[in-house]
Image (cartoon, rainbow over all chains, first blue to last red; front, side):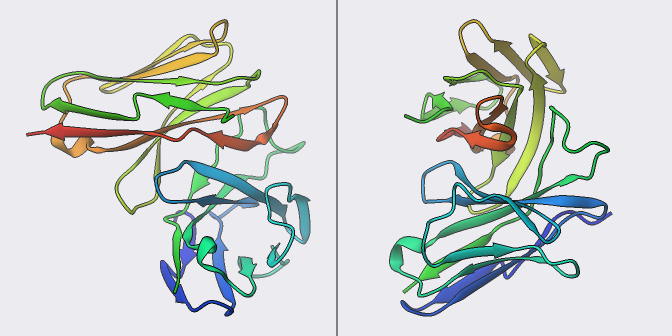
Length: 119
Length: 113
């Protein structure tokens, strides 16, 4: 059973370009979460998605950032018109689809991350 | 300020010694988890402790939770050079939603051979 997969692992973009990060959750998981880690800091929650639904995007910057989790295919985190401050590691996590929703002891399984560098 | 705060920020010990890291948080939680992150790599889940638990063990790891003090500690016994990494606590709880993990800033552990 493969773990959470993210690609690319490293992404370099110039200012103003678009960055597209992909996350494939673990098999049987229908909840996906995106976190951002700035250098020397902990991870910060960005967004929580289920298939075709954004449940909580309270951690997403209001502009330039968007996320989706389509019915088929991976979850995508999209950053438009990147700036140097977007340089960070972006981690995706997934959790299983439990009857009745997420349990109180929700365990999230993290992918290896995508390291975005904006030149 | 940050929900999860670890201390110390950095810790350097000799191989074979024990390493203790602490995490404090501010609001009620459902569970607390510890993760390890090697430099430039992803997160490795170490241990989850629930709010109604006080202590858990896993191999050389011992985690305690004191909800009255809103703090947790991670003890690594008989440390090895391979334990060199950053260690993060992450909480999820009633005020943030059970799915929204709040991470601390981490303790950078260096184990010298």
